[in-house]
Image 1 (cartoon, protein in one colour):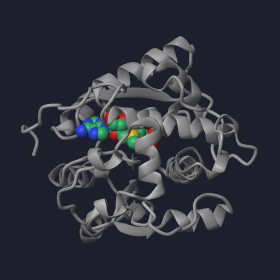
Image 2: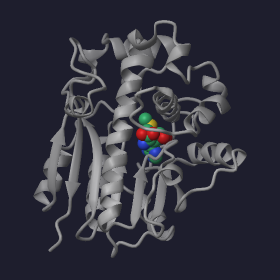
Image 3: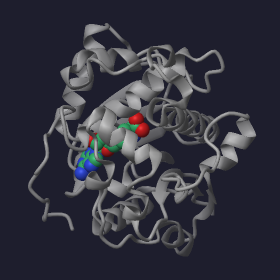
Image 4: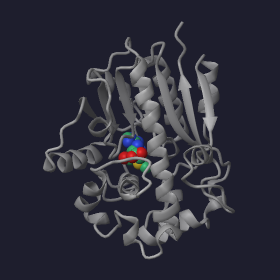
Length: 301
Ligand code: SAM
């Protein structure tokens, strides 16, 4: 798989293609931030939205959406992203609080955890995404004079290529425990790239390391083409998620990690909606039905 990096066929930055999905999540986080019952706070999120011509007219508060929470995109789907942010914030803070001092954000997009979470001061956050996305992010954060709370190392590389060399060249130490997040990423990658990623995380993770990732279990993603979420995302902001997702066969990454000795647990987002008493619940023809959040720990020997 490394050495066979495919040519980019989509726009490299956040203006289109899969890069634009980083802005979709940022807009959702902005909306979540301004909610009275917010699950996660990201004061930087709305600045990314305002800085990108591609989404200058997107809402950053639910009050700006005419049908408010009834809107499938800016209501239910945005709340989903808010919940996901909170759940992975909690996972990361917990893992860094115990042992892991290296954080790797795979497909980091406009994630600002290095700027907003209270992590131990000796934590280093590595942010992997494509160069155009990280350049846009840096430009906005520099414009805000934003300072990360911990050391932050952007690693511009395509995750369909051999990204391990780029990460270790950036200072990642495979001998030290680490925590990895692949939030809203794996379904955009071809199956072999996901297999490579899971193998690499295992290889680079010493005992005490942790990984959380999001997967979609549907056998046929197109079955939900007419779901409210996919339809609204397509019609309101022109992002056809089903066109961006990889439709080839997917590996069983949770099973593969278990086979490698990791302890894994798999949850639906709805489990956390119930726990937090807010967030999406199941509905008919639900594009979120197959979404799973997987939490894996490499046991201390
Ligand atoms: N994890 C971030 C979050 O939750 O806010 C961003 C999620 S966004 C839906 C998906 C991200 O994955 C985008 O930033 C995109 O650029 C990145 N991505 C997709 N394919 C990638 C690839 N082949 N190499 C590096 N990054 C990739």
